[in-house]
Image (cartoon, rainbow, N blue to C red; front, top):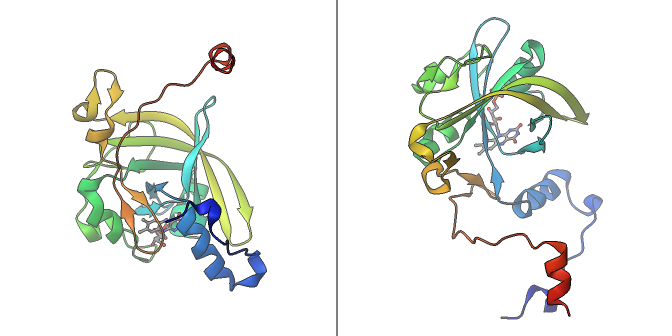
Length: 210
Ligand SMILES: Cc1cc2nc3c(=O)[nH]c(=O)nc-3n(C[C@H](O)[C@H](O)[C@H](O)COP(=O)(O)O)c2cc1C
């Protein structure tokens, strides 16, 4: 088998495919995506829980994370109206429950109750945390940015809770965290082989080129 560089490539502009098909293609190559298991509470006091794999770290200082609502969904509405949300780590142990909470329940139905997922109070914000997830990141909604039907929700991190059982000293251990990632289609993945490689300081990089 040749390297990808020797292959003929398929060149595609967005307007050459139906838009959902083009998006599906991108979702299959922007991988693996971490999954934010987002808990919120509506202005009526109903808790909500849903996975979002359009999720990443947006800023170190100040600490800001983001998720994208593709369409105006309950998580977006609650995070926007109440100004609060929690990102729970989507781990292997909760795989089935995470997937089940991706079912489109109506806004007046609480996924925690519907699916028997245990909640625990947050420390700073009102939405509850998932008791069985090893990490909870409590956020205040900082800003939203719209792209057509999608809305990116940025949250300022105000508190993090990490289970002692996933810590190795002061550091979260990747094997114990066991995060799940989203791939294309209906595929999910666990963490694969870990490679440890240090960053190379500039003077060392230059010396090795001598
Ligand atoms: C693994 C996984 C990842 C998902 N990622 C997203 C996402 O990034 N954005 C989105 O809008 N929906 C995503 N969904 C679909 C939502 O979870 C689903 O529409 C859910 O019902 C939304 O719930 P809500 O209306 O309570 O916010 C994902 C579903 C799964 C199973």
